[in-house]
Image (cartoon, rainbow, N blue to C red; front, top):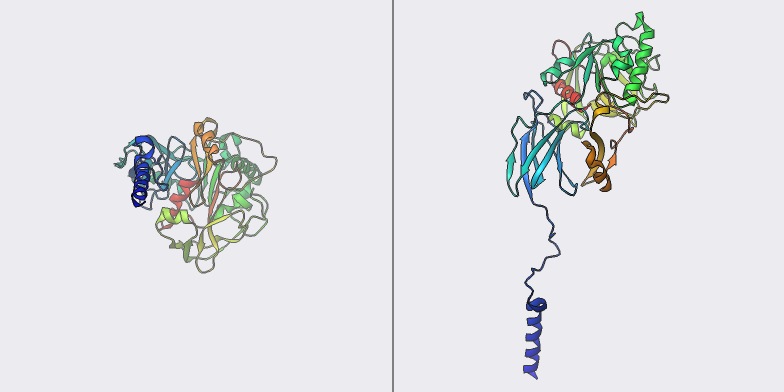
Amino acid sequence: MRKHYLFILLCVFTLFTSCAGGDDSPIVSENVDPTVVKTGKLTGKVMSQNGTKPIGGASVFTFDDKYKIYYTTSDADGNFTLVAPAGNQTIHIQTGNGSNFRTEISATVKDNETLNLDASQTKLNQVAKIAYVKGTYDKIEDIIQTLGYTATEITNNDLANLTTVAQYDIIFLNCGSRNNYSSNPGLYTVIDTNLATFVANGGSIYASDWDVAYLVGGTTNTNNCSLAGGFVPDTKLCSKNIGNVGMVGATVNNAGLTTALGFNTLSINYDLGAWQKITNYDPAYWEVLVKETSSNDALMIRTNHFTATGVPTTPIGNAPNSTFVTVCITLPGNIQISLSVPQALVPYLVALGATVGPCSGSSTSGYIYYTTFHNHASGNIGNAGVILQYVILNL
């Protein structure tokens, strides 16, 4: 009986080890994915177009042949390491949602190897058409130029011409540029209407200090709430020119901006009095990027929630000729990012859960950035200068 029992055990063991008639296929563990994608790494340093300034907080990404995204961001020194699928890939480098500044790189990624991209490849290119209105106290154009980008000077008369305004993707309003309001208020009524049309159709604006009057009304500056003029609803923002001279301790209130800067606290030198203090804002409409540490007062805000009724549909800047589309993609951890991708990829990304348009805000609105501080002609801006570089690249 014992011999029969041993014989049966031997037969069972033989059946398991033979595995169906001598087939030599390996047994795959339940914890191992047999379709793991072979990957390598790409390293590099994102630089401004003239190669002089590192760009922090830039999105660096690519897709595999099943349209899965591989994504990272550059650190405050512009450095990045991207894990990417092996093979011939297109690497995208973008700031903001990629509609105004972006670069595409062709690279061959090898399995389990690291490829260092040359600095000449990783320069962030300007796609946007940029304009600025000359101011009394600001020269944002100097910061634009130090990054190697170009901007065209326009006037308030140009702002009153919608055809001219619509040529651009971004318009910078330097502090003090609204200084002839009292002599020609009718001109600014037209400007307000044109700026509303511009932003509602995807154009972006940066205004500093006294030029909040372009947004909410007023003459050279804004001394009270609910003044005549402007195009942003008075219920969304109030600013008064009651700021005092002095150093203000500030805190960066946005994770993306902190990554790009490499710091989250700074001192801002308000060396001119009567600067515009934000006294009230709608937190559902505006995002606070920088605030005063002691009082929590907002010092830098942005929105892409602008909408207006009766505004004509108007092609803005490069949009009519662009082959890129803004989409919202969800990363692991439920992190949502807005990126610009080639139009041909959109149906496949949507099938994987992406949505067309930005992750937040109005689907057609451009950005409005407003800072109570500005870049003085004297250059006395300190760390605020790095913040203004971020503003330029993320509009």
